Length: 158
Image (cartoon, rainbow, N blue to C red; front, side, top):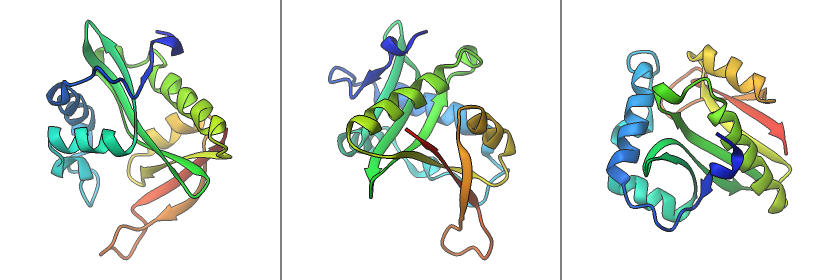
């Protein structure tokens, strides 16, 4: 798939149940590996629709069904991305990289200097994947109620 197949804020998207399923299935491997659990465990399809009203939604569809997604928003001159998911059959096709690159281009057009994400400390395979996409670890994040870092902050220039 090419970057041109990535939709940003598609006005005709309404299948929030399918998007929720994509995210839930994509994040299932984190159950029991991260603490606190992903905020996604508390989100409904309606919550995702609300999130898309306040943030940018990057979406790749195949036969109208979502096969990859990511959310992004500006925060103090940096563009933050999260909830990146690619369905299992479409993994290893650089769809995640294509969405990250699309978000970086959008961020640059809005005057942001960096694109940033948070990756859980325990998910080192994600750290390596993001490093291959040009991200570097620039800090740590500790969720409220924890006395140790629970995520790393990763950033790349746009």
